[in-house]
Image (cartoon, rainbow, N blue to C red; front, side):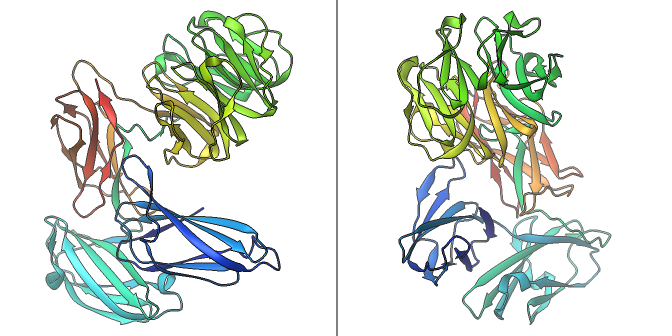
Length: 546
């Protein structure tokens, strides 16, 4: 799926080309576009069909949408479904992000006049620029300084040439260039002007502030573990977290902190893991046996189960231990003793499995649906979720159910009801998930890192953990911008109480601002916002102080 960025001002044409999908004799006879806005707070989809486009046309194999609007800071998923003259149906998706498009930054001395060129060749293509508007804003106070900073501007083919005058030393200015073309398209580009002592041309520039490490119950943060073929995970009652490696060892993180350290077990094709309330750790092997470490000590010992393509494991509050088989059945060890016996479920590519606090058992299918067994008995019934490459699942103590998609995002069902909604995580080879006793959610990545979604909950100081709020300046491509001295301000966005501590800090040489003494005066659910004058702000996910 392509990702397109534009500003709220811009008017662009999106072309969906189905030529590679269609048969030789197919022609498009009808089309429709469906658009959803993804709310910045919780990413719930709201149908806004018809509000973004001024027109849509189709040729024999293409559909063209004239996109004329959009709300700054919002993301829109645009889908085009079309039907051909032979009754064949096809679908394409584009993610449209409404954001600033700062393309460059440069420094200059206060006493130097410079000329810059803004190139719109990649935007206007075969069109011609009919008109332009150039404005400038002082980011210190947000005031317009067009007349004092902009000497003159002119259209030169696909270029806009701008003369930039003087400026005040120490100030940062945003110069915005807007163009209209002969083909009813509009484009916008922004640059930053730093007035300092040296002229240094740079290639990256700030467009927005984002939370890197923050009180965000949505984002999964890398734990910087060695890249391995990570598979199943398990959280023991004593706080230790286990992770196994396909074709490798079993690793343990002590108390949920620090690195995962090898336990020096025999190398096997480990797949799934689970920890019981008694502290026993199970691990299953793809094409092999199931093993158990008793009470979290010693080696993992074979349980002499039939060799199967064992995949993922979970444990019910009643002590029953489940294990899925890929292209097979779901098996259960009753009360944690004896053999794993088939539950006589339809043979499917069963992967992840988890148990909700209410006793319902969820299981997902790679390239299929998500299923649920009510209360730990009976058959697994399809929940009619979108067919995806589901791989791992986890149940949180608050009733939320997580499901990870291989080469996709992580999804969540809120409180054990409704559909699984994306948490908009970076597409990775997500494999397995697990909840720690403190509420943190772990997720493993095949050939990558281990990630954690952190939940903040303190009882004594009501403080946000030191160095946990880390904010970065990023460009439109979501790459970090190494700009120092930019002031970032924190504020309470939602929830009651007062945000205390040092609420304004400057970025370091890497473009980060670290807030290490923030605290809140009351308990409850909160969100906080990081803002910087002239840049798109960022609001954290909801977190809880208790």
